[in-house]
Length: 572
Image (cartoon, rainbow, N blue to C red; front, side):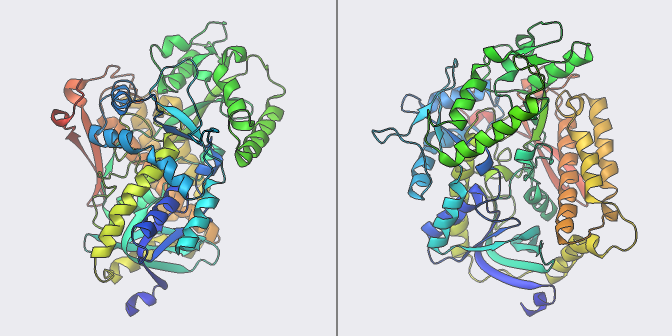
């Protein structure tokens, strides 16, 4: 299409994969395995194989061990984790098929820990009888996946930020963005596009800061539906000095009076951290009982985590051991002045907003567009009423990334093979997108920095009183702060291409925060991770619903959809 050449460099592929982390690489490999004749292009704004969150986490995959039954997993999940907000059909499919991910990773060259007899080596959560276990994978997994993908003929385009989706009518026809080093506009035409660009993490905690919500915003602006956007306020309890996660802290918290307060806020069966840990911390401070500390000798989960992650006593994982050993060494230096046996903890806001709506094939509501991994984790609805990842099951982040990537890639490969010629691109629409993307770079005179907008959005999202301990008044206050930050987007000014990327990320962050609060104001109950002070009870009579958001006439349209419980096996 010669007329597109006037806008920038035009590149073509049968399947475009946006994002070079574990989900994007798994999707690219799967497409090539399905149909080697398809041209697959992975575009990453950093470097494919080193991008995303997978290689800076725990390196664990939750899977069903030989002693675990899929039916037990589904039943446990619906009752204790997703609280009946799940798509039970997709949840059941996940339970019955997710273990195959370990075989695929192994075949692709990823090092998954095995016993001497060849079986997957796993651990169970200490002191808790749950129908899953944790397998270990080394943290060089994405580099290994990139090498395997390259051997299959996958093409890579690094240091290119794709910001918006190209369209032909309602169909997605590729994406448009720019090089973060040279600032040049690039357009990618594709028969099928797979978003694998991660969740929105609001740039607060360093380990998760790469989750900028780019794909979420691009899909929304193109007209795709969002679902479960209100589940985007995940927190870990972290050491006040180092800001490193204290695993298990939520079960061993004491206030300044020396009172153990964990059971007060976390009664009953708790497979992992829940919103009430942060709420409890906040309420203790509100009542003058802070700081909140953790009794280290009681916290077997943290002790076990240090052994699991930073030694070879359980799994032989050289890259993971080096990473976690350095991390805890730095944390120990930062924490040296604190009380070792009773360290102070604070909520560490992570976010994990992943609302792009997909069906059971990981297809979005827009023809030609698929979304896999963290960008659509909550939007797939199989995890229910929890921010995802980790969905209150550590290790499902990596597992879902590959599991959903394979499903989406198989569907996208079939779609691309049957699509015929490359779809045409609306040149006028592409030109308008380019104008919006590059506006901060062309702005003259004084302007607003991306960091200024980011800090204002963070101020509305990170306080527990806004995003975790919710009330209508406080959420409206926070939404007002988000809208004020949004009102400054037209004045963003970029100093260079890297800064231009930050400006577009600030747009994404403001959009995701607005989406979070508009969906949260709609849900008038407390369920799972979602806690409202003014509606403290779960309301199955009125709120067994999914909240759906889409762009309509320039505004954010919010609606509800009844969960089809009549067709599900497990009912409240």
